[in-house]
Image (cartoon, rainbow, N blue to C red; front, side, top):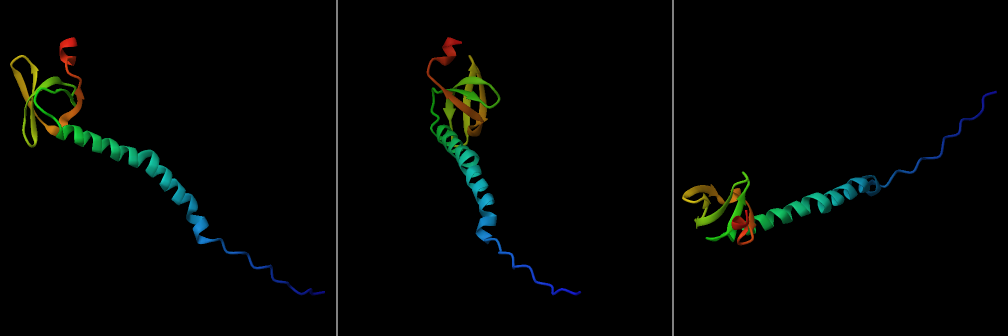
Length: 105
């Protein structure tokens, strides 16, 4: 009448490394597709801002187009029109344009 109960075979424990493997792979993909290119872009921008010199034609983050007339440690003076000079932080310079771009506009 009463049958003997048999214990089920013990389930194998998953490997802890295998359970974290998807998270590790996601982080590696995130690093190579998002973080690393952004760091490279920031390094190039910083290098460009440090190399600014008098006579460069630039575009600021605010969209102003002008010619660099004075460069100091932290600030840049840009002539945006004849006789109109603005003073900006170096970080506000977004792009250095090829020489003669302002004349072509």
